[in-house]
Image (cartoon, rainbow, N blue to C red; front, side):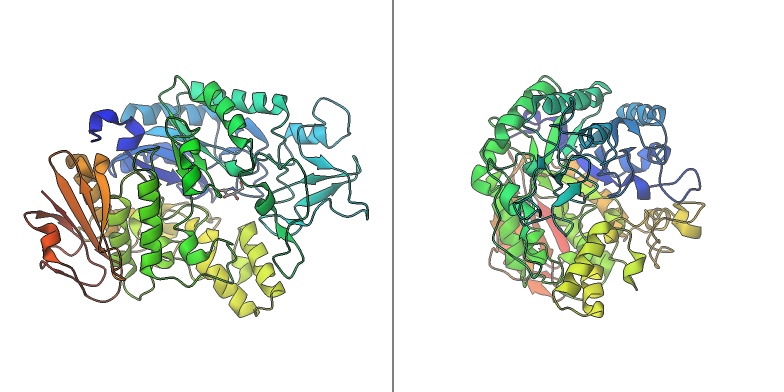
Length: 555
Ligand code: NOJ
């Protein structure tokens, strides 16, 4: 049986995702700064956080909020300087909070010096750093692939008289990992950051780096006559050779972790990807976020789902990582809507939903990743027009929905439901103007309810989501079975309650979360001989759960 001594630091801690543009602005410019993160490290420590994943803060034209990197060795001036980053890493290390950098290595910005050179001509040392192809015989794009952000995945380049491939936006050309010079350059960048003392890496869009040997049209899957690019390029044979090389050159011999963003890796392939034989320590996989959104991720056609679908996905991931690799638990990130909307099919208070799902987040087996604002119980924002959104994917999903015959109102409703901007609005610190996020004009609006949903107000309220997160963080620290205990699902067919047992060495916990808006019952023998360790609603009556009540029993 696993004990605390068997686990690495990053398996025992709580990770927190910082979206730096929306965390805290120390300059009155309307967007967050690295100094803002440093200023709030003690706040993060109070949540039991030991690692902060910072989404890209490198120099970037910000077409995709930093996921279009111009220079991987420079901090974007809007965030501050490299000295600010060094200070953040040092101050974090002093407090036991490791910085985790986001490596965006499937593509660069079109303004990256490598691409600027590459697009100039078919000769030259950077000519082969990206995916260039001649036009199809009719002069059009080489294949019918649709980019993830909509439109053709190919962009014409006048200078070279060729097309280049972009899995995401046209301003994000895909790198050619077949070229050993590209791989060497990326390894050097990762080592540059590892040498600075960061605690690990989140690696973006990693399943797309290896392109197929032959480029061919895929089956048409939309009114636009195209085929999703990733249907042809995700998790292509040979990808693991690249990643083993990367792991050996970057990860081996260091006390860091690497978590890959890995759409398209099936559970039965997992042991090649994580653990002893694998290339990463953890993988963000999306089987549970696909339950409400649908695997095709077409917002205007969401999935029909019930609680057992979600429970089944979570249990499958728990089982798949029971003895190989480790699971990063998440219900939110900067690409997802807020979980209080996404994973509930009932009405009810947002705060109660945040506490119920927060209980699951902090008690499943794995490293919890809290998205900034999740601990405060954010809902989605009520967006009134497509013009209010910043995110390029939201705009493309809106256009796609119109193209599929949906009305403007229906297309807007789909964006309200799923837009990535829901997760990207500023962090609300207090009840002052702009929720204390900025003295300027925030780049995205704060929520209407910021007077009560903010760090200061919730710190003073023992019933707030924030106080509940702190309570759960302390509970994890005291009850090692919540960290290293095994996972066994209980009440698997129940459509209201998600329940499981965490069995440790000589101690056990049972978690019961009523994720429905109705009262629920359970067999009280499940918790026989145990005491209530924590409950969202205070003392609880054995055998029943109030709507959205979650409890943790232990013995
Ligand atoms: C995944 C990132 O999380 C997302 O925000 C980004 O738009 C794409 N990869 C492209 O880098």
